Image 1 (cartoon, rainbow over the protein chains, first blue to last red):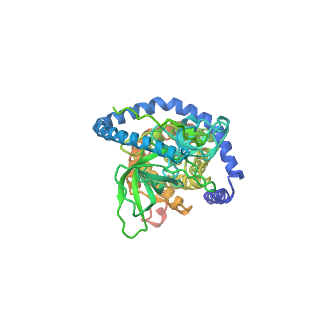
Image 2: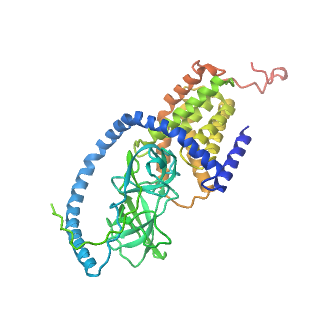
Image 3: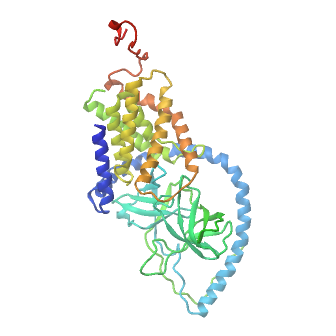
Length: 289
Length: 192
């Protein structure tokens, strides 16, 4: 009997990996999700108070430590805002001088659809979540998914009323990214077992990257290899730079902005940002608190 | 376990409820930096009380539900959980542990084996990414948390399966004595 079950499993695996996304076993999986997603949604709502209570207890312990850290971060960000405002004004004036169009950037024109997380994969080898919005709400495969903090992942499959999202911590994930402010390009990849530590690989070695540098999605201007993610979605900040003399590229570790363990609500970006022609007026410098 | 619609229904309910609790509730809770994994625990509990064959079938069903319900590769989790159910059931049939705290040891060993074999299967299926050393810490925390959860889960499973099992799981049993292998030839092999 065990041998028969093992044989069935091996056959299923062979067929699953051998067929395309429209194959019979993928379709069966989507059918199961159609049936299960309303039940999962009900269970998720019913269990939310329990999750909140346990989360509240955990958060209380960590809040005091985070308070001091956040105060220091706010002070640092105030300085950055001043610098960014000046840069934005300069950039707008330069674009006017050279008659350039403004880059399509997140979040303008992305048409976000807000969805509730109804289930989460229990194994670290598959970091996926299910959300309660599907193709009937305009959600489609390969659309980016963001949270309040930053990039969360992308849609990998949809049914009428639900969708599966592969998080950026999923083993299959790879996101083209830029380390700001230098704009060094690389690829963000996960490390299985530690969702708070992502790797940015293939960064040019001669470019100096510093701790706390921000990593954003780089988007793509190539029509042939168009990126799934629009430019400018924040991903995380640099925590560690791996010193390795032998490698051709440098690699850094980043902490993602999105808290991927506590996902209750996410937004699916159902449209790409449009290219906006620059207007004659330069943006006003925001008031620095 | 008697093979009947009632037993299949009860096992199915255990599998479905543990799946829903895991993916919609427990999976999102972080305690001490780790998280619970109810599914191997539920499969181990069913196998512990009902034997190797029902254990393997329960593991297979739970794995199939996990794969289909979460859009993962069909068959991978089913393979691991079917083997786990069979192994726990065989352990019960061969060793017949009677200690009241045996479920804790069974839960710890099952969770550890499940996580280890899942990692092995993931690598065999072509996983090529980076693996953090913190995965080891996460594994041990999950084993610890599942051990804490073992007694209530095994109690609920025993209570649910009570009417369809051959032995009443709540009747305190004595471990079966080993058949005598030595002594006068006429008594060898007799359970005296």
